[in-house]
Image 1: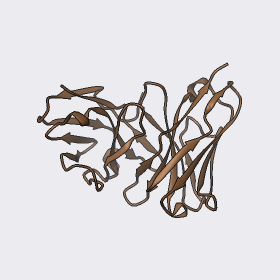
Image 2: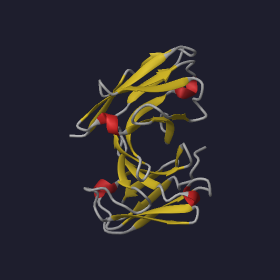
Image 3: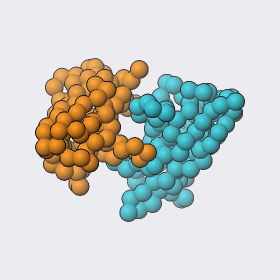
Image 4: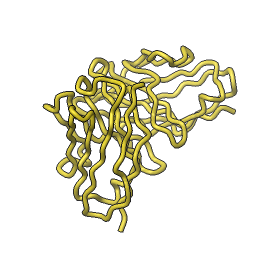
Length: 119
Length: 109
């Protein structure tokens, strides 16, 4: 079945870096754009970044621009989020979500991975 | 502060109907017919319920419907059932970025 599974979360000190991964299965990964969406504890959803199916276009939320990067390896069916210069306000569950160009929506989400930024 | 405004809570008895509003601007909801709604149960990832304002993915009951007028979108749940109790989030494309509402906690009394 169509599935995405996030990994790589953990506790990290402010200013340090962390890389998240999202393993996709059950669909042709290279045909779809992919996103990261995060949710701070007890808060709502916040879109973080998107990468086009072929990696040619990438867009970021203002809150992470210049600190986070998004990439993908279509040969490994895997999406990545490199997070640098982490701040306490980056603490959240990070979700990977498949993107549908026609209609501009997210139709498959993972269970998320928790990132805690704390000293 | 979220980009889209939703009421923090809503409630209804089994069998009743409820409507959740989602207000944005002409730069997001008002500018595109790309409004989607997501259901999230505690400890779970979000699930798509409505896309392109009023379309339902396969597997989503027809009790769920969506609409839009100007800068405000709405999600209606008819014939409330116990399993509908969850958080609901609206979202809109906003030109190379996406925005979400703060979420509405739906309680089935």
